[in-house]
Every structure is written in C-alpha cells, then in structure tokens.
Length: 143
Image (cartoon, rainbow, N blue to C red):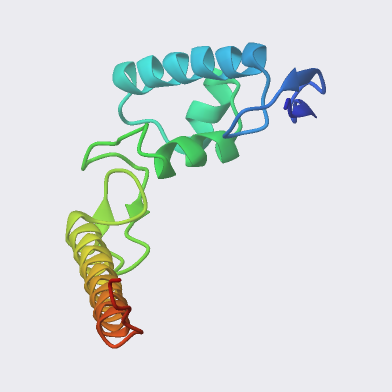
C-alpha cells in the first residue's frame, strides 16, 4: 500500500516512507545546503547564527534543527552558545550534555530491565498455573 503525500517544501507529490515529509529532490537540496554550511563553519569558526544564515542563505530554524540533530558542532570559543536542556551546562551540539545523556540512558535501560523482569515473572506465573491445571485435570482410564 502506497502512502502518497505532498512535499512540505515544494508541494510535489511523492511516495512517503518515513521521516520529514520531503521529496527526494528537496532532501538532496537540503543535504547540499548542509554541506555548504558545514564548510562555511569550518572556514569561518567565529561566525554567529545570523551571519551563517545570511551568508549561506539558509534559515536560522534549519540551522537550529541541524544543531539539535547533532549534525553541526561548534568549538568552545564559538559565539554560538548552546546549553543542555536539562542542567544548563554549555555544550557544543545537541540537546543534552554527556552527563545528562548518560543519566537518561541509564534510566531508560533500568526501565527496560524492570519491564522485562515483570514480563518474565508474569509468563512464569501463567506457565505454573497452566501446569497445575494440567495435573489436576480429568484423568482417563485406559481400556
């Protein structure tokens, strides 16, 4: 079954699979723009978001998206100040600092382990109940 959608950027119809609602042509253009921005930042490490946006003709919204996706990274002395959304520590890219990422990852792992243990216990309980039902069930004599 196909999932036909209109590209959110150019309006062209395309077969949507997953991710952003963008046709292949627009995805390619955005990737080319990303490579241009990446090179610009390497050549001009002291530039701010507005200057990068103006010189590369890309929206600050798109730049921020690339930063949050951890596709763009800035040096410690960069004028672009990114802070951890959890603790406020200065970071170079993304949403969380390494310490907060580790905390979130550990909490998620603990939750998954607890859920697996609960499911295993529930399954064992069902199997025990099923085994006891089979033992106490009706017995037939062989003739």
